Image (tube, rainbow, N blue to C red; front, side, top):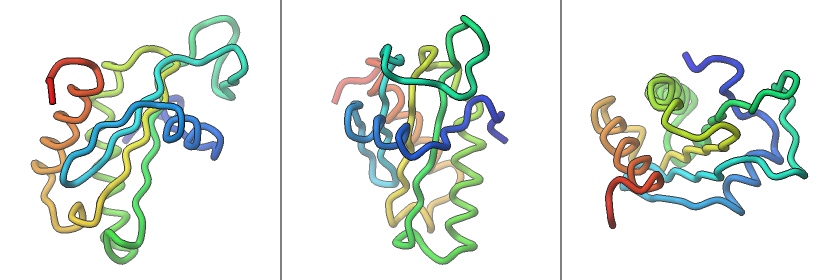
Length: 127
């Protein structure tokens, strides 16, 4: 499970990552990344003067499948992101949007697509 301090919850944070961040698409998912917080942004989880941690959120629409399938995909993505959240700079906002094929995909396929998208966003793999 992704720790609470690393979860993206506010609508404004999701919108900031999707609208003002960079994105990398794969067949099963799209990853949006907004690095660092600007002076106008606030982090409700920040304590004192320390830099806020990177936070991740997930968007899984009805196009992916029914409620059981959507929850399964969200659980898998949270589990996968738990091991990858440390790759992002402090204050980064990450939104993982599942595409319709994610409902039928296995854990390994989701992991492969997530790794490729994250690598592309962080500059590790060229298009």
